[in-house]
Image (cartoon, rainbow, N blue to C red; front, side, top):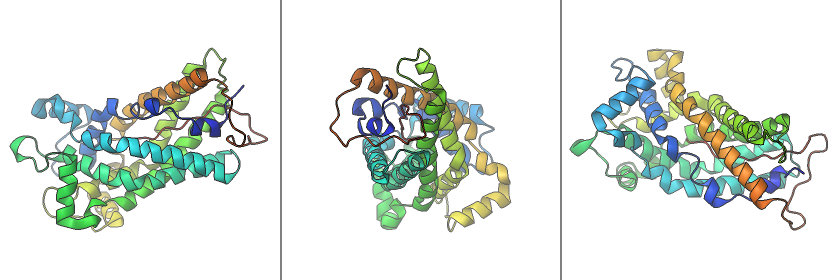
Length: 312
């Protein structure tokens, strides 16, 4: 018997959901950020592999994990917001359907931007700063404190609009894609191919989520890095898009995509499969109070669906 989408979304296991998502592939995000913000007039890196080698050579392995403290600080709060908002929104919408899965995911993505935006601002600044004595920030909190002293609350929330434009649709796609794929693949608890199917559904969902808004991620990274080395260049989102396109063409909006997709498939495959299997077999068909589960959509076959935030 299938577990419903709503039941799974309300019964997350905190120990499983919190740390699988980003930490193991943080180095890929460091690489993608550096590729996204580098100037093509004086490019520092020729591609993903060259960027990886350069960081190792110049800054040691620790250079790949610059800014790690920032996502670690905010990850628990982000997951709590995402899962809570998604589950409650899905319940409020009244029925489990593909459209409602998208809307619930989009609502969760929008709400978590309150934490995600300052967290990613600190992470981006730390990833781009010089190593050694020349570094500007001592850590995530010091970074945000310095930005607040110099620019106020507006500075701490730099890139909020672009973060909203990225997170809202991408979380919708994320939750929707996994729901649709698990149903289409017929992910039954007794299926001997359950784990491979969940891996495929989870990995594909992560890739689709990133592809849906990746150009916005490039713009967000550039806005948050703007002014770190020299005077600010951009007046806002549209100005950043215009200047970037004029100087570097449309390819600028796909810069760093390879390293991001290398991260997206295995991380989301492992995340979705792990949590779904744990919930299905460890919890089993627990007795639930009446009213906890949403009625299944009448025309759609029920299937396990699980959503996990992207990170980045």
